Length: 188
Image (cartoon, rainbow, N blue to C red):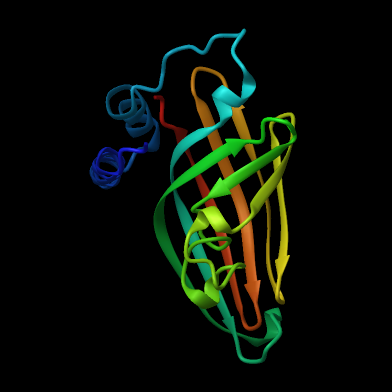
């Protein structure tokens, strides 16, 4: 069972220290060593799913563009808003299909405001199929549902810890939301 309180406390610590230090290199090292305990070398004979599947603490930028008409067009853009975001995402490598990854809690896909996610009626992320293809370290999203789309790419790399980086775009009528997020997998 996921210890939500522990994840919440670690996320608060992450945000607090990020604001205080403002230097990603120093902070990432501190966060990795002290808060997550995630900087121990990985075993080379372990199952790749063991290194990819897990809870990821992600931070980054969310950019919302709204347009005057119902179709996104650079000439008709009326407003752009940028927000720093922090997310906790669950990722699971599909056991019988090593090139498919299941995501839970991915903003813009299965979580977020009603009009700002692909699965608009999704109440529990477990019931909304958010998958990405995995080719070596590259992730690809291409989800279309009821006129809404969530497309993007990213990487999962494993060196001393598992690091994920995602660039994606949600689109629904006159709203386009771009996500540029990255983070590390929490060690068990």
